[in-house]
Length: 560
Image (tube, rainbow, N blue to C red; front, side, top):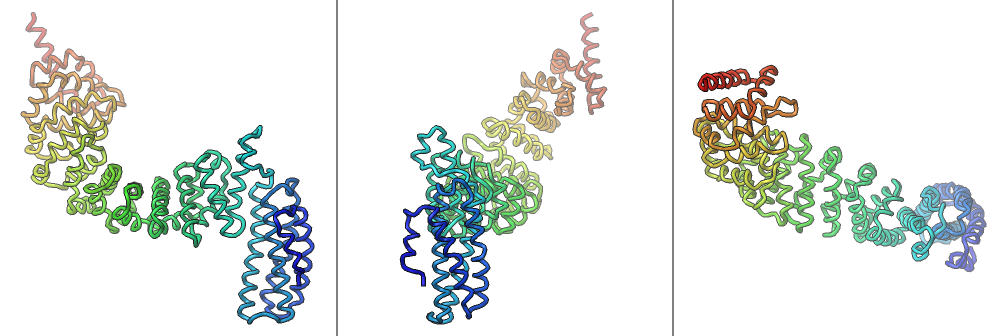
């Protein structure tokens, strides 16, 4: 039996060199005793093979010049000594057959094999982490040294190494330290973080302790939000445990896991993986039941997933449409409502069946109600633009679609105005609807949009006007505007960047029946533009050019 005095070598005041010497003494003793055992041969054979690997591990640890100064080395040697002492004790019990039952001894030997595995693994990791390259500098000293950043990095490397080495409680303490450091100095943590550290954190997400899982997901959430290691997180398998935390974690765990998925789902490939790992249903449940922050993060994640066309049908089958419409009506934060509108916009972009589902669930009414706010959002208008072609004119009018369009054209962002003009293009398939749009007051607002700096905005506004001026009532409205002709003539610019020119030609052709408008066109240089557009074979340019040139000729004769 190992003498009781052997415990003195596990005391904290022992130097690393003394601990190493003691371990080197005990390895041959443990091996000799293990080889004498006659029972449980399979298990002892495994134990012997692992004991034979310990000398090389000890050699690797001790070969570095900073070995004696490194706290982790000392702790690792103490762990090895405890395992060697237990090996000797169990071997002696087996040799003398003085153990309490065969099953109990089998269990003890299995536990010993696990400890030996952990010792060998931890020795290997300790060498690989790079922490042996620096002497440990206490935080208080690091803060006052000539090179504070190097000292800080050294401490952070130790915390990160401890996440991978030792028993769960030691990892828990390291995690606490890392959480505190990240609150104060996230930049330096990111500077020294390696892939093996990410792998260790991902493993801790499945720890049996809820507190460890909660603290781990807090760190992972910070890492995901930093935007610096998404690929490592995903490749190390972070998605399944995050989804499980969304499903059944604590309130904090759910929140942090959902925010992590929100950030990671911005990649289309990761979005597909989240769907593949069963993440849709837990996220939908968060939207229905959780607090404002988690709800907004879940809605944003589902919005990110809906960007990927091939998963939209799966999302619909999980009930996302009804949930998003409910968020539009009752979402706690404005952000949740905005994400819901974006999600509906994505879902209805190209799938007629999904459009029908949104309409059936009352989505048009909810989207219109959402637009009543002081700053109508582009996403809601975009979703309506996708839907209007599948809704009858009578229903749109009865739901107050046209006043909302006017509100967006007056008060919305440029993107929202562009989506509204696009909706006008889609909805104006009948003379009656064109008349109603004109009467609602959209025309002056569309004329103003022709002055926008963005080419795509000018294009869709001119396209909407070219459709509306097909009826005389709207044409008269355009003619009355002081800026109508000047703005449209500016859009005759023949440059390739100007994609509104064909619509401008169409609008000006409709206005050219008015002598006043023709004079204005000529005075603003329309003929020069049209000559170039005629050479480019822009539809209608030749006919409008001839009309203006005839008018100019008559004007010359009249003056004479």
